[in-house]
Amino acid sequence: QVQLVQSGAEVKKPGASVKVSCQTSEHPLTNNYMYWIRQAPGQGLEWVGWINLKNGVTGYAQKFEGRVTMTRDTSFSTAYMELTRLTFDDTAVYFCARDGPSPVPELDCWGQGTLVTVSS
Amino acid sequence: DIVMTQSPLSLSVTPGDPASISCTSSQSLLHSSGYNSLGWYLQKPGQSPQLLIYLGSKRASGVPDRFSGSGSGTDFTLKISRVEAEDVGVYYCMQGLQGRPTFGQGTKVEI
Image (cartoon, rainbow over all chains, first blue to last red; front, side, top):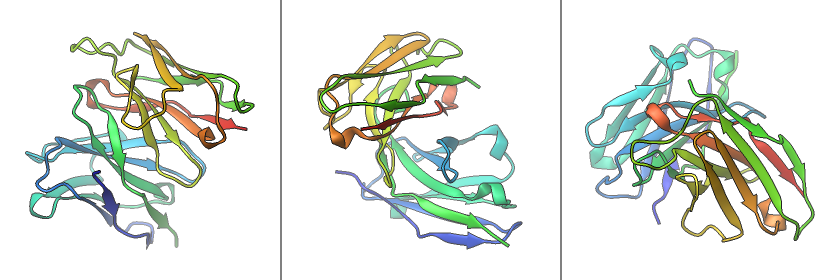
């Protein structure tokens, strides 16, 4: 069973950046896409973006364009999400989720979540 | 972006009874593959979401057969034939067309 293990909780000040990692137990990476989704306290799920793990192509939600960068390190089977110019509204749990093999997105394996708290 | 609307937003159920959640999309989710790009996820308290149904009606690995998904185009339904105590949590539908996923607001299911 594939597992996704994310980095630990972060506390950042407004204007700072945060980089969250997501390591998969798959070696080598065989799935095409890794998605990042966030959940503000007490709120629903919001898509942040995705990265094609084979070629590094990314797709970001419009509201995060210019502030988010997703990368991957195939040697370490790890995906990363960096979010810059943090505001209080970015306080949320950030999940990575693996896309399954079907022709449409099916997020069949999720990381445990990383709490990012933006506080002055 | 495609807007996903779920109803009801909360549901109180009795163990052993059936339950049903509706999800409507602002445009058709029929993919060029012939499948519907619609999944259902359950987020149990304090946990990450887990995939229940994909392609509108296919159960994910390990998901009990009391869960079923149906629908096509813009209208979809998740049914639980006999609710169990472990089914409590928030259920989300998610569409994945055009590489820009969006989620429904979530339906909180309580016993």
